[in-house]
Image (cartoon, rainbow, N blue to C red):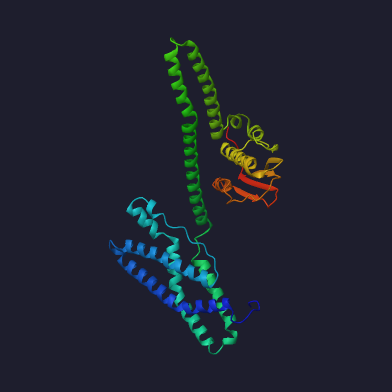
Length: 377
């Protein structure tokens, strides 16, 4: 029995409205389902039969979308939308046709529409009669009948299974990885163009002028060569910094402990680094952990106003855990514009987790969790 509450509150009125709409919705869905199956099945002996059935299955998906929206609005049922069929990437016409014909979401929606007509008639008549005869118990009847509707929606109109939801997540993660890689390439190109490349162009021009003055004014030429020597040193330093931003050599050679100690030494806040790992993880996981800590330490330097910070890295079963803490002013958020959202997306793309605990006034604790994969030497 439902919990005690006002007999005809807003929730109950929505349930009654849903039950009254069951009949017209069931009539529409039943007509569509039977017509689609009968016409498509009868014409399968012809050329247009299977394409027509495929189109009907795609249309059934839209009916299912309307039913989910109705259940969401009137019954409060939160059912995720199934992932769309990748028709545009399906290859040739035959492959696309087969993809539509074997769509489990379309078939289950047709089944849902085909079996609901008797239930729609029953609920409509029961509610209509109860409004005049059994109105004291109508809220209880409405709750019981809408629970059946909820079960039908969840059972037949929800995404196929956990695998389909996983596919949707992986498609989203793939897009994040592609966008992140493109952004990194643009950053590298910009740094090369604005930094080392511009400096090397100036170096070439300076050496050219020094070559022209070498015979007529050796002293000036020597000064220009000395300036060019300084430019070479600066260009080399910029290239080293750029290479460190791509993948630092210390990480490849000595692992996370040495690499994180190196990046911590460049932080404006004293940082205590503790790495407790029995072995080195896979190179990709190690790189993500390094750049996550590097980005977080940059945020601490720029925004936290902290006095001290700490980095802890350890392994728990099949997960690599990274925790960065500071005693700054707090207030860090995933949507705060400090790169936190990008870090969360990057970790999510490899089945990682990213959590931020940063109340106003501090302290801030950021925890990153990555899947552990053994390193292949």
